Every structure is written in C-alpha cells, then in structure tokens.
Length: 481
Ligand SMILES: Nc1ncnc2c1ncn2[C@@H]1O[C@H](COP(=O)(O)OP(=O)(O)OP(=O)(O)O)[C@@H](O)[C@H]1O
Ligand SMILES: [Mg+2]
Image: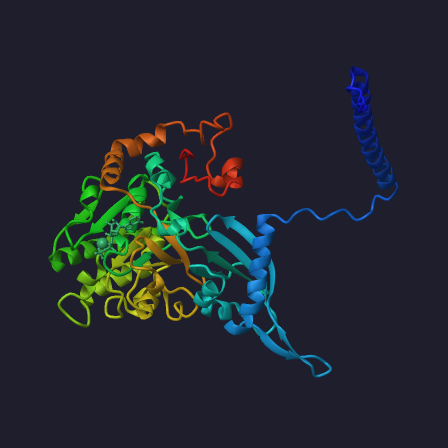
C-alpha cells in the first residue's frame, strides 16, 4: 500500500507571516536609507567645504566650450596667432585668449578676445569672412568699440538669421509715431546684427546711401522720410529725377521736383543754397554759430533719390553745376539746419568723388557689385577691414552696412520696410494740422503697461526701455509697443 505524503495546504496564518516579513524588510530598508542620509547631512555640517558634485553643464556652457576649442585650432590657420620663443628657446604659439562668449540672441554670439601685443583689431577685421567660416557661421562682424584697446569683439551671425528675413512691421516704431515729434530725436531705421535698433539723428549729419539696383535704397530713404514727415519743424525738399519715388509726400513736401530735366533740379538746388546763405547771414547777425531748430528756423531735409542723374548726366566728368551746389549744401548746410540725403545706384568715383563722399557723416552701403563700389560709399579700405557690402547676398534685400560719423568700422543692419499702404497712411497723418496740434497736446504716456509712471522723454528715462534691449522707443512722446 503506497503511503500518500500529506502536504499541508498553505493556510491563512502562513500568508500573514510572509506578508509581515515582506513589510518588515521594506521598513528596515527605508529606515536604513533615511539614517544614512541623516548621518551624511550631519557629517556635511561638520565639513561644509567637502567637494560637491559639479552641476551639469548648461547648453550655453557647452556651446562656449565648443567655440573656444574651435578657436584654438582656427587661430593659427587664420594668421591670428603668434609664434613665440620662451626664455629657454622653446617655440610656442600665442593665441588671443577668448575671454568670454555673450549670447546676444538666437542668431548672434559676441566673442570677446584679448589681443596679445602684435595682433590688432584691424587684423581681426581683415579676417572677418574667414572667422565666420572657421566658426561655421554665415557672417562675422568685428566691433571696435569695446571700450578697451586690448580687447576686440567679434559678432558671429548664424546662417538664416532674422536679419536675412523681412523684419515684422510691429517692430517699426514709425508706425506708432505720434505726429509732431521733434526732428532732433533719433530716427529708427532698422536692426543691427546684435538685435539693437539702428538709430541715427536726422540733424547730426548728411547721408550717402548707395547700392546696386534693387538693393533697398529707396525703401531705406522712405523710412527716413516717413519719420521726418511726422516731425514738426522739418521741411522736406525732394528731388526725384525718376519721377515716381516721392509721390506719397506731395502734400507734405515744401518742394518736390519730379522732373527728368536737370535745369529744374538745379533751380531748386540754387534756391536752397540761397536759403542757406540767408540763414548764415542771420546767424552772423545774431552772433550764433549754429541754427537752433524751431518754428523760425525749421530743419530742412534735402533728399535726392538718384544722385547720378544730377551729377553725372550728359557729361562723363559729371555735371559741374549740380555737383558743386550739392557739395556746398553737404559741406556747409548742417550748421544752417540743412541736411542732405543722397541715394545712388552708381557708386562710382564720377558720381561720388572722394571729396564729396568724405563730407557725408552717415554712409550706408546696400549690396554692391564689387568691393571697390562698397569702398566708394563707405570709405577707402573699409572692405578690407570687414565692412564689405559686396558680400551681401543678392537674395537679401534691405541688408546694408552703416558707417556713422567717427566710427572706424561699418556695422551690418537690416532696414525696416514700409508698404505703399503704410506710406499712404503715414502721409495722411503728417498733415500740418496734426503736426501743429501736437504742440498743444498733453504728451502721451510711454505705454499702457507702465502708464502709471510719468511721460518718458527718452528711452533712458523709461526703466523698461532702458532695461530691455528689444523694447523700442522711437522718439519724444512716442508710445512703446
Ligand atoms: N528692408 C527691406 N525689407 C523687405 N524688402 C525690401 C527691403 N528693402 C528692399 N526690399 C524689397 O526690394 C525691392 C527693391 O527695393 P528698392 O526699391 O529700395 O531698391 P533700390 O535700391 O532703390 O533700387 P533702384 O536702384 O532700382 O532704385 C522693394 O520693392 C522691396 O520689395
Ligand atoms: Mg530706388
């Protein structure tokens, strides 16, 4: 007879025992981890300087490190490093130290290098294009204005940056400008590579604007005119040999010559020279050296859309009469409150001789055919120093180089664009009634957001504008976005 082995079926009490054992082991685990952490914390309070694990590097740290590594390899190849020998006769290479990387915006980085003796900012400027290539960027701009002679700043611009696309019109302050602002306030014309607005003063200097056909000169000049049209105490004298450009400003202009006849333009130039001479006589009589812009002596903005039509027409040596009148106005006009804006699609020496070019305080070169043409506008040697408008691609319109008075190096910028409908709307707002009414109107507050604060006359007065580089302020009494 086979004996059956009786295995007791697991009863309820056995299950309970197993569960209790499991719970106990979990509890012991938790208590021992907590105890361990407690002991560690207690020990750390006795050793506060104990090394802590380094924080994970941020994306910016990684990018800065990569740029630094690239620079170490690229500098000797670009000729921006020096071969030295130490006291023991061992050769070594001195590379300008990459001091820091500033993250300007999504498209732009500013690299600050310390220059060793023997390497200059001009050496960097001459290598701007190669620098861009070495860092895998589309463009590089060398800034001189670092405030220290031993530092140079290089702006690196990514391919397809915002400046290669059209700027959104919400960024254009002229569309929100209140008629009747002062003509002495700076005019916002576009954006620099750094994302900062390009602001220049109408009153400070005369303007030379050059570039190939279709490069964006007229669009730029219209932005300038739109702002000037909305200011009070500002007369517009417009010479339009092409007869189509300035139609928007017919009602606002003091003089508008739309004619292919050179004689008509010369007559207008002669009239303006007479005004200038009369103003000088007035200033002499009053013992003043410079006009104070106001209702008695408004700013006069003379805009010539195609200089070549006036100075080089008919005669290869240029038209001496028109050329001389323009030269006198550019040379002497400013003190008498007259500023000249000349645009030309022929940046050649017969249209803009060096003697005339050098009188313009602001020089703006849009895309040019050759670096010699770019230099004709910006100044000799600028292309070699990195300010070369012939490097601007044909597909990018409104991208230009600007050289301000006293600046050594041109900066890249993208100009604002005003559609025909926007120009019409601005011209309709720029009526004499609106411009005069402004004087009686209580100035508007800066924005609804900080309307509780008093009126800010300049961006520096407005904490929000001053703090936020992308917060625009177009001029006196103009609302911020
Ligand atoms: N800043 C800009 N943003 C967007 N589009 C622009 C800009 N500048 C120019 N354009 C485009 O390029 C076109 C030509 O520009 P514009 O008329 O200013 O050229 P131009 O240099 O004056 O040419 P031309 O020498 O033939 O008079 C404009 O109609 C516009 O479509
Ligand atoms: Mg044009």
